[in-house]
Image (spheres, rainbow, N blue to C red):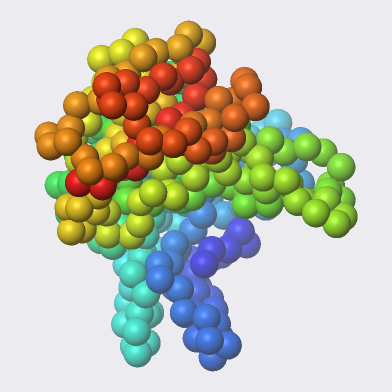
Length: 319
């Protein structure tokens, strides 16, 4: 739940959010999590007609340019708003957990965290815009992961846009380096009526049909052979630039390994399990080629899989 309309203070924000939650609950809609404000640091570019509701991490003033003149403007404080919203929701039968700060980048989330208490939130939420998937600043991502761990709060990646390989790389970095518990892609679907292709959407709609796009297949490699409750376990690869993540089922009877090769050249990866699996199935997507979640059958007896350039390979093993 968020608003892009300007408010006068935190109390008004809390009141509007409380009314929204009560109204939605009456219609049978109860959110699992609530964000006080989406992109609180974002200001539309000068040539855009978009609206925004900017927050500073703490209530105060900032200098902005209005019609070529610098003006000192008062802004609400994000963490004061979180406290006001929490107080306003305290009387609800089941107040939803609050996540934030829902900033556009990891660095912006670090900036908000430096000025506020992440423990006042129930989860750390952020977006991955303005991020080059092939050149992630892992030091800042690890710094935010450390802050989340110190505050004992899960990290939710709530918006990202990238093509197929870019989505696979962001998934790897978000889930491993950042330690995120959730990854959301924006957009789910793009309408044919827009007339402008959007290769970052999962699904492209036509008048009578739909097409699954490359980001869908990237997400599928991480999700088809895992499920809620699976946990990430240690995994690594020493074959070129191949990136590896592994996921263990709650009963420890299945493990899924995801390999991402961002390089242009293929790599042969020999898999080493702590115990030989009873069976293992391999699927592969090669983004410059035609393979999309292609089932390749059983893992070869020698345990070696070929990971072509700019591809994703999933190995789903039963222990």
